[in-house]
Structure formats: C-alpha cells, structure tokens
Image (cartoon, rainbow, N blue to C red; front, side):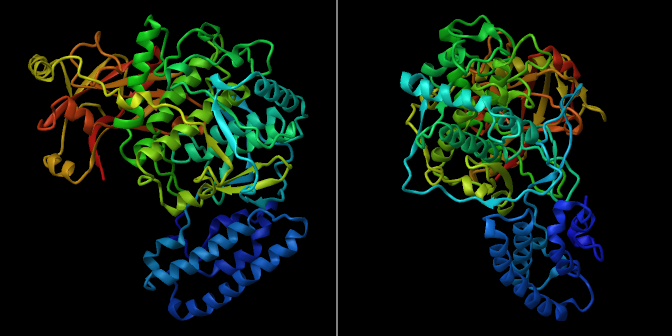
Length: 608
Ligand code: C2O
C-alpha cells in the first residue's frame, strides 16, 4: 500500500507507474509538476513558496486548458482529478503549519474507478464474468455533473401499488425500448445492468492503485446506488420523451407493499423476469429477514417485518457508521462492514427474489446479475428512500462530512450519451437532483420490540447455564477463528465505565469481527443478546440485535474479512442490562452455509 508521506523521490508513484496507461497520459503535466512535492525533502520550506506559485499558475491555467478541451464540451479523464490533487496540496500547505511530515492533506483518499483498468471479475467464486464496456481500454471524454434545470418538472417516485394504468403502459413501453437497444449503446438495459456488475464485483481498479473497487459493505453503498438509478430513471424517461418519468417504489417496509408488486409478476409486461423464485410471487408476504421458507401466517410475517424494520432503521442505526457502512478510503486497504439496511432488508430481499433453481439464487441473488431483473430498480428506489428517511429522523445531523467521501466519484452515461463524472457530494440533495418521494407511512417507527422472557428471569436462567459451562468465553476463538457450524453463545465483557460512555452519548456496539465466508452460497446468521430459548425468539423479541446476511462474490472480494457491527444501547436498556458487567451474545446460524463461515471473535466497542 503506497503512502504519499513515505514515497520520497518516487512521490505519487501511482501516477508515474500509470503513465504507460493511455488514459493517464493526460496527467503528464501534473506528473512533472507534482513529482518534486516530496514531503520532508531538505530545504523544503524555501522551495515550497516557489512551488506554490508554480502550482497556483498551473491551477490558474487549468480552466483555460479545459475550455480548449471543452470546445466539444468534454474533458479527458484525469484533468479534473489533477486540479483536485493540486488544490488539495495547496489547501494542505495553507492549513498545515508548514509541518509537511504530518500533513495528512497531502494524501487525498477519495475513491474513484480507473475506467481503463477494467478486468473480468468473479460473479460467484466459480464464475468469472465479463462486464467491462466495449472499448474501455481507451480514454473516454467526459463532462462534469450538472444539476438538472431547477425549472424542469419534478419527478415524483410513487409507491408501486399506487401507480395507474397509464403510467404502467408508459414505463412498460420505455423499458421495452431500453431492452431492444444494442449492447454498444450505454443506455441499453444490458449495459445498465452491467454497471452494477462492474462496481459490485470489483471489475475496476481504483485510480492510482491496483486495488479493485467495490462499493458494497462500505459507506459508498447508498450514494453509488443513488447515482446509478438517477441516470437510469432519466434514460427511461428520455426513451419515451417524458421528463416527468419517475420510478415506482417497492415499499416493502409498509404492509401495503410487502408482497412482490403485481406489475413485476405479470408475464405480459416487460417488468416480468423469469429468473426468480416463483414461490415468492404474490400473494406471498415478503420476509425481510429471509433465510429459508418459514410457515408464519401472513399477519405474523408482517408483524415480524415491522419489528425488524424498527431494529434496522431505529435502534440499530443510531450512529452514522451503523447505518451507512464503514469508512472506505483509497490507500487505506479495504473496509468491509455493511450498514444495517444494506445487510437486510437489502441483501435478504435480493436473495428472496432470486431463483431457487440457480446456484447463487440469480438473478437478484448475486450482484453480477441482480440489475438484469427490472425489480432491482424498484427495490433500490426504496433503499434510496429509506436513506432519506433515516437522514430525516436524525435531522441530517448524522450526515457524513468527510471530504474523502464527499469527493469520491464515479462515471455514468446520461440520457444524452454523455459520460458524466459525478461526486458523492452531488447526490446529497434529492430536490436538486429533480426528484422526490411521495410521502409514505412509517408504521415501523413505533414497533419497538419487547423481551421474550422477563429480563430478571432470563438473567437467572443464563447464570445457571453459565455455571453448567454451557457457554464459551469470548476469548476462545482460536487463531484461525471458529466455524459457525452450530449456535454459539459467548459471554462478552463490557467496558468498566460503560455508564459514563453512555452519558456521553456513545453507542454500545457488538462487533462480530473477522468474519470469513468461504462458500458460494448465501450465508445468514442472527445475533441475539441474553437469549434464553431459541424456539420462542424472532426479530419481534427485544433480544434480537441484528443479522449477518451475506451474498458472497468471488475472487479478491472473497478474501476480505467482514466485520458486523450492531448498535445495542437501546436493546440493553430494554433488557434491563445497563448495569451488568457482561452480556451473553448468541450467534444463531440460519443457513447450512454457515458451516463454511468462520469468526475471529465477538467484542463490545463504543462509537462516539
Ligand atoms: Cu448493489 Cu442491491 O445492490
């Protein structure tokens, strides 16, 4: 892993190495300009001002250069990044007290794909897939993202159960057109679907590194999918000349939306897709915490779903990272820890929709194939809506402010066939993006679960079980982790000053760390706290802390160990466990595939 701080003489080696790459040749001006910017170089202080002036001149010249390049309204890849980089350095100097050896600002850590470094990737451990767009080897002209004209009509995304015949006919027609476009056309349905394959299986390397870029199980999950469906929606609209077209939303979190929407199950419409699990067609109520078929009555399933939503949206998601997923930055290795809603209902419903006859429950059940199913877009509209709901619940106070997140960027083709560079910061205000969601109820907000057994009784039973040595202690996971071939209960110690931490507003978090999934199949285990009787619990019980619902990819991605983080402060309060020195955490395997899942340990941490 390259650290700019330590790469003296070979400063910005990523750029240097990449200069053989046709796409990166554009950055050659910057290479000579930045090669000398070696932190800690002798006499740096004197040279710095000279360099500042030179760089300032370069920056001043860049708009002019762009204007020349933009004679066709285009830029070339990397000119924009070059500006960012130089500005980053100048900003760093201005604010760093001239202490360059510790100047973190020198290292921009935004994530971005290198479009010319695309390669086959693994859709499943046993399946190499080729999702790269035609001609990716050559640099492609691009434009910077611009917000749609504020005067243009708003696109209002409505719950799919509320849309009328007229709307269905329009969308149906547009989707048929999209499906008939040739593969060469980036607006074609197949190319749109492959966008997901590209970014979710690690087909692109990151800029300035050879590390594959993958947006799942990171803080890029929400913004990347927002971008993808934003462009898809506008393309759909433009194919039928309708600038008000907005997605239907599969609102699976409210009772009215908890079945597969009819239009997706109607064989006469282009939304129908045959690679699905037909036993899950209407009127089957969706299982938001799906692992296998249950025999719950529709009403029981519905109640369980609402309690589950409460956990995923409210009690389990009280800190940014718990909802958004882990901090993912360039040159810091990978991060691999999903947010609550990404694990479930997102992953669980992908799996629930996918076909039971396919090895990876394709198409929805694997990321390389998921976006081939039109329901993907209705599913992700709801994911996108719930992101807004969560932000609203927290009055936008938990929004990420880290510039590396804000400046991470991607490329998408728009409805006019232009390649657009779009940053995370561009997609944080949906009204500026020209769309909104029709107001939807939040019935799960008041579905706070209750304990399945009175907490005092539970504690006594747990203590006697402990005396009979029925539990493992948190330390005996062994150097290679422990396989989750059977249910596992561990006693986990809490911090001595957990009460003070709580007063300071810190969230208590169960971390199941170093999770490795070796198999190919969907793997799911649930996590319970102070659970006494496994036959009477469900997400409706307060003991339920959350779930690990994992869709394995393949190749590089498989080697990355995962951390599962579950916020439990409210849960511990409801279980009257706030004063306790330790808690019992049970990992309950839900799929047979858990026998090829290993875990390195369970701990309690605190998030400020
Ligand atoms: Cu990128 Cu629903 O997944």
